[in-house]
Amino acid sequence: SGQEQREFDYFKLALQWPGTICQGNHRCCASNGCCQGSNSLSEFTIHGLWPDYNDGSWPACCNGPRYDSKEISTLTDVLKKYWPSLSCSKSSTCHGGKGTFWAHEWEKHGTCCSPVIRDEYSYFLTAINVYSKYNVTQVLNEAGYLPSNSEKYPLGGIIAAIQNAFHATPELQCKGGAVEELRLCFFKDFKPRDCISEPHIKSYLVASSSCPKYVSLPDVQA
Ligand code: 5GP
Ligand code: 5GP
Image (cartoon, rainbow, N blue to C red; front, side, top):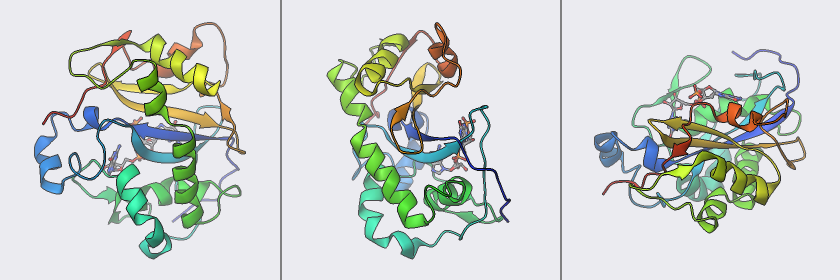
């Protein structure tokens, strides 16, 4: 069960790009419908809202109530659309069991958001609100970075588009040259901040070092 942890320093909103996660994953996606159907696949969806420390580490599996799907029953429709699981296997929970993606994220990360967020409902509602307010997909589309299976875009251009819109530096994670995740960082009052703790010239690229100079935003293949 959970550990007593010191209070976190800032939030990281981790977003995932379905077109990258679903590449090579077609059978899984077809069987549970995760990469097709209800949710739009040409936009970032939520991976999790994560509390972090300024030294680059983070707390996990803190003391707090276990996941209870009933707590978020009024949010389920919205969560299915914007926080879908793109994996076909069940997720581990903090207590040795298996559960949904939502159970995993609440128990691993959500329980460590105290004292800013103290309950499961607030955790999911807050994540949805922040995700809606800082619309990364819209910012990238308006800057000309559209889903494509042929184009490659400059990593620096994608980072600059987010910086211009939100006045803070994101962190990107790539897989095989494609954007897999884009993470936005926030102070505890949800004002945007950089995802790097020691800003200096060019350091924004360090936070995204798994990405090459030119990256793709793949469309989900039909
Ligand atoms: P990955 O190795 O795919 O980046 O991350 C694996 C897992 O480690 C994530 O699902 C997440 O639970 C945790 N993790 C990775 N990076 C961070 C981070 O910067 N902050 C927090 N809080 N968790 C992270
Ligand atoms: P993390 O610890 O990286 O926050 O969460 C990753 C865990 O959630 C893994 O155990 C993974 O199997 C499970 N999971 C379920 N659905 C998804 C999904 O759509 N994306 C990611 N990254 N992990 C998922």
